[in-house]
Image 1 (cartoon, helix red, strand yellow):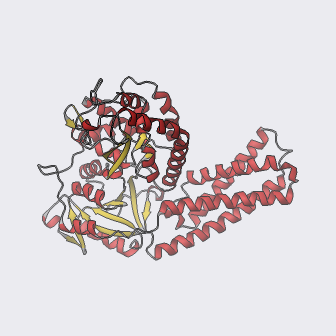
Image 2 (cartoon, rainbow, N blue to C red):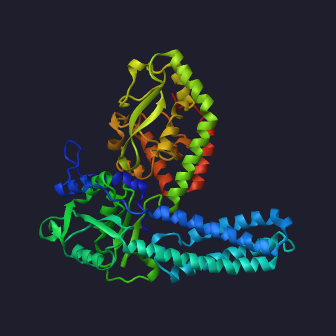
Length: 504
């Protein structure tokens, strides 16, 4: 897996734009953007449902066997053991990467991974029983029966799942919207291979290539050239793109690295086609898009089951916070109304996931006649635009609480890079002008709180160094994301809010 050095990418990444800062797209690219998007089945949803069903089958089976072999009074011991074992099994199945659409299409490989993980869980359970001296509490007949019957159920479930996913693939319901980077004869060969063995996996939108003339014609094997690589960035922000396949030889190292540094800002999977390479790696080095062998260069930061896990985390935390903090929000609304005339809420446009424009909610902290919807001027210490109530709610971040509604709408996450105002500046420069690669922070959904905020980078960003620090922390979060990291940030946020030195 190729990893972009965030600091290097910030220094090197640049989009090719005209003097006005606008990226011009070809007429064919605009035509694709304007066309309605027929979204297919979501791999993340399929993986999530598969895990829930699989866990439920194992839990029901474990308790059913218990009901046959074990005395009912021991329910209080067996139920936690069963639930804990099923949870560990789910973690193990994910650890061996068995919950992926590409794996669901296989049979021998998929079953081998699952049975190996299930055997490991049973072995761990037996070690735990021995370590805690619980041998007298657990029936060996139950344990062996659950292991063997569980293996049979897992095989049957995975074969059924494989058959179902294969049928959906044949129907074209799992196609990924794909573009190719590269052109000429090499891209023509790649397109023919895709059509021969991967057409049901890929909805090929077009080509992007920096070369011109005979080496990169406008039409390759019936596939349109849509623009240059830098224009792919704007294209992918205006229409869904799931996968980028790079048609370049490994020997073209400079071209490949330049392309990756540009495309790193996008939330897409990037694969290097192996069809041109004379090098032959071991089978484990490749992943497959249909029948096409590829090398994994970059993955979208949060995908598959993790998307559902983060979605559930956001909704649970947002609903709980709204219930617990509703008295604070009501009191804030009343205080704002009593001090000054005008609306309780302040709505502002900001950049969201993949640079989409979203409208976020805040409690109004400024005087109505001095509102700054574009954030052209950052709030400073003693700012006369801020009301007395505004000073307090800004210091305590109470003004951000209405963004819980943005979380429920799916525009924000609870944790993620903070969404900045469109015209926010540092040292009189727009953020995205001051920091190259700034938009890489939008590869995940922005959040109410984040890694930068709990590490002290909160409040005024009057210097380029401060916004650089924020961006570096945001990129660290994206590269190291886990649900446990999100939980840690949520728990640390109230503690960090006690430090109001930079908040005004």
